[in-house]
Length: 399
Image 1 (cartoon, rainbow, N blue to C red):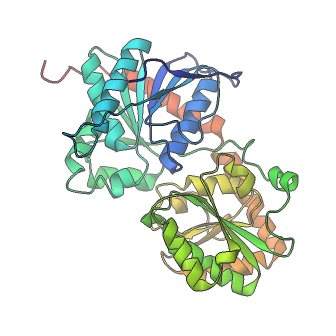
Image 2 (image 1 turned 180 degrees about the vertical axis):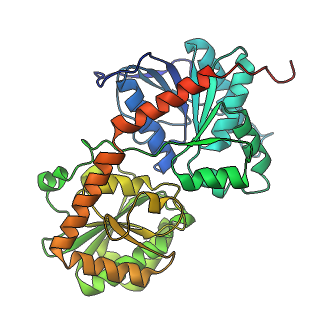
C-alpha cells in the first residue's frame, strides 16, 4: 500500500470558514457526476483553508494541484483466492490509516457503495469520537444499486450509520427516505459550478468547433444505459436533417459502442466526434449550441449545470432531479423520456431563432450564477460537517 500521499501544491485562495478541518474525501475517479462533484468540492474546500485528502483507486480525472489538497491511492492486492479483489476492505484499511495519521475530523463518502460503508468501517477501526462520516448520495447508488435486493440492506445500514446524509436534489432525498431509509433525514445540498471557469466568454475566446454554418451539439456522461445514449444520437440525427450539425461526445463507458452503432445506422458517423475523457471540458461545452441530456433519470444533472454556466441551453427528459435545474422553455427544453422527435423538433426550432436561443443561453447563465455558484454551495457542506461534529459520539459497535 502506498505510504505517502501525493501532495498537490499550488497557491490557495478564497475566503476561509470559521475554522479549518481535516477532511477525507472518498470517491470514484471516473468522469461520472459523483467523482466530479467530489473532486470539485475537495478543491474548493482546500481553497478555503481546509486540509483535504482525496482517496480512490486512481487519480480522479478532474483533480488539480492546490495547496492543502492531497491524493492517496488505494492499492488492491489480487490473490487467487479472491474471484473479485476486495476493494471495500482495502478502502476501509486505507481510510482508517489516513484517519489516524492525519487526525481526520470528517470522512466524506461520495456514493453509498462502497464508500459510505467503508467510511463506517474505518470509523469503527479508529474508535473514539472522530472521524465523523458524511455521506453524499448521487443517484444510482439509491435508484439502481440501493434498490437491488443484493445491496439494499448494506446501503440502508451505511446510511443509518452516517452522521449526516446529503443529496443534490429534493427528488433524490424523497427517493432515499421513501424507498431505502425511512428513519434517515437527508439534507439537500445542490451541486455547484465555478462560474469563472465555466463561462460564455470561452466561446468568443476559442471560437467554434463546428463550421460557421453548422450547429454543434454536445453530450457529457459516463455512457451508462441510464443516459440513453441511443437517444442522444437520434436527437442529433433528426436535428441534422433540418440543419447541418455536429455532435461531440465527451466521456466513456459501456454504451460507447451503442452511440457508434446508432450513428452508423443513421448515416451520421462522419458528423459525430468521440473525445473520451476530457479534463478541460468547459472549453468544449462553451463552444456548443446545446447540451443533450435525455437520461432516464438524473439525480441533479451536473453536466447540465456546467452547460448552463457556459450559456448553453439544455435538452433533456422530464425525469428525476433535472426539472429542478433546467426550467422548460426558459433555460432549456424538457420532454418525456424517450420522446426524441419532440426534443429534436423543439431544439431545431429554438436554434433557428437566434434571438430566442440567445435569451435561453442568458437565462441559463443567470440561473447558474444566482443559484449554484461555488461560493454559495460549499459553505452548506461546511455546515454539514459542523453538524456531524456536533452530534454526540457514537459508541463503537460491539463494545
